[in-house]
Every structure is written in C-alpha cells, then in structure tokens.
Length: 109
Image (cartoon, rainbow, N blue to C red; front, side, top):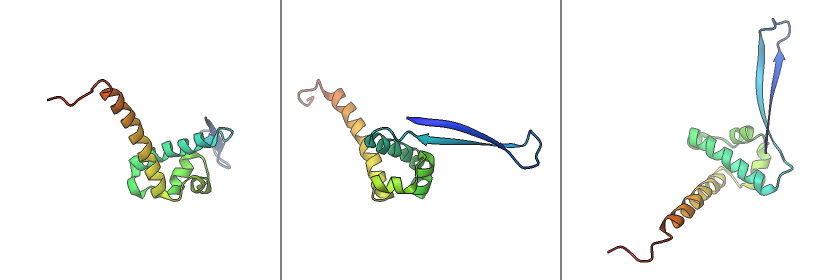
C-alpha cells in the first residue's frame, strides 16, 4: 500500500504566496516482502520505460520511497532488476496467450 502525503512549507521571511510543495510517497512496509519486491519492480518498469538504461538505482529507490540498500536487498544490480521486470511482463503475456489458445487442439491446415 502506498501512502501519499504533501508537505507545504514557507521560505524564511517570505510572503504567504511563496511556498514550496513537496510530494512524498511512502511504502507501507508492514506488507509482505513479496509485495515490497513487486512494488519496486513496478516502479522500476515505470522509470526504465521513461529513461532506459540511463535510469539509476537511486532514481528508482527515490520514486519507490526506499533507500538504495533496500533495492540491493532484493536485486543484485540494475540488470537483475530489469530481468525481474521483463520476467513479470512475459509471464502476464504468456498467461493471456495460453487462455487465447486454450481451445485449439491441432494446427490449422
């Protein structure tokens, strides 16, 4: 579960109209470890689809609301994380393909 919050703070000696908003995303770490891992994978897919191989573990961790060390707890490196992301996408597509082909018994002549 993702917990969102927004902080508003005012600059020192500023007018009330001058403020900064920060959006912070926290991951609820009371969830099972598998959920945390999947959440990190989902965030990584989003970041990697936008930035490609230029994406860093730090960027993924920041958007997931975790420290870099948490990512390295689950994945050896960025390549390992990428393989997990691709694996998940392929599993979903394979399941859909299996459902689509379920009624076919033999090749069509």
